[in-house]
Length: 317
Image (cartoon, rainbow, N blue to C red; front, top):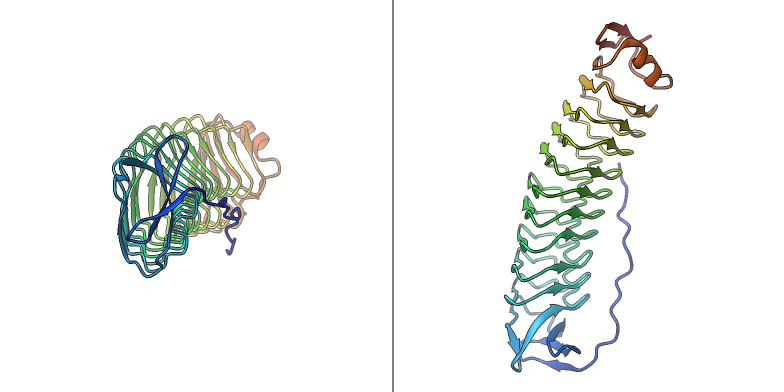
């Protein structure tokens, strides 16, 4: 299903106090007496080493859009004292193959590495607390990401359409996964989310076409709208015991899903939650028959499907 990524328009204010360095880098002096990398003047440069200092002063930040669209850039070394990478800083660097972000970095702006289509290897700083919206969206060759334990939130579209991504090591302290964060990651096959996660937003894993199994965190209370929509290979989903709600079309189009076990404490099950799940013919519900009928008054399941409740079975008509 084609759902194009929407993002804010890149913005960079006029540059002040610019000075050019001999390798094409342009620096601007900030009010705190440190330097910021403002842009790259030489579009043909393929390798860059950003020094730790310039004219005796620390280089602490990379400005918004600083390397935007530098299509020849293949390799860059960031300074150890760097603190901030700005929004859209490396967007569209088509040939950038790897990036190691030093542990001094505490902030990476939204869409910083968006559409770095040949980016394969990423080492994140162990001192960032969030991965912002669209940071690695459409990095089509990125195949593995280790999210450090300092990260608490993953923003909307953070890894959207990373179609080669097969291996995710999640932060053990992660609490929130944003909308479409891993949408259209077509090479993901298995996901085990840490129990620290309490919120997964709409469409977080939609259209992960090869996703087979998912283990949801114990503390998750709600599965949002279209979270696993169109995950057509999904066959195994483990629900937390404390789950209270499943949103609209949360598993719609998961047509290989054959059986599910729903917790007895489930209070909200939206009518389209399991639409177009043509193979779903066996369900277990850890509640009574009466509780099942109350829960599913307007929910559609396959005719002939069997629901095993604690006090007997129900056959869907």
